[in-house]
Length: 295
Image 1: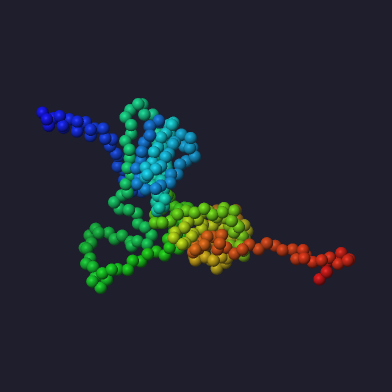
Image 2: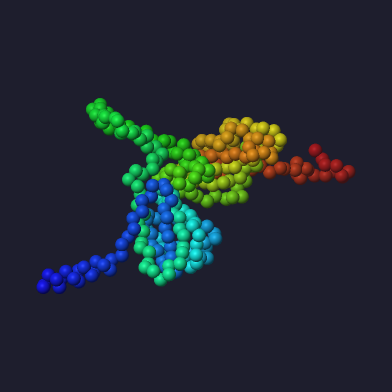
């Protein structure tokens, strides 16, 4: 009888513990149902930024603290995708939410998102080799500590910027330590390619350690096809890479491209040559008695 007395309260105590649903992130969107008026918790164990469509601003409350997200819908929400970006690595997790009426049913259990057992390959890592049908190789005693060949940071930054702008978000490979930075959108870029009839505007910028990459959109303003040559760029750059090697005539789909400029120890604004304003040579000339300007 004594065992029954102690076992019964213990069993009741365990029934009050709420279960946690485990979801594994393997680059496929995770479905997270919501009930209107009920809060659902998502544990991520990393500091993330949440990208939310503007249409949900007034009907979806999102709070983030201590590696957890708290979602509460105040109205029905059709299937909508949220983007959770790791602040430290830049990796993005895609979550598909949909809010329906709960009908006073049980509350939805919390969710814990964990990464898959095979994390995405990062820049600078060696290519994975398939183990199917292959024999394990013995280490070479002469090379007990093989040299690690890492991708140069300017190359890694350029690839990350290009993927961030044009690749699907779920395919963007994470780059440890990269952060997106703010630069002046009204930055004067007229001195970047002064010999070419192009308009240049800033699309975005990222930083990794002491390196910066800036994505610049180039638009042809002439009716001629233009060849893009990095030697025509003016500025203190570590590297430059064009998305395309030519610009089509203005008015067609190929009249626009992007150049990725990498700088070290300075931002794009600091790397550009100063703009030169037109000077009226007659300003400093004194007129003679007859009205003409004296030499």
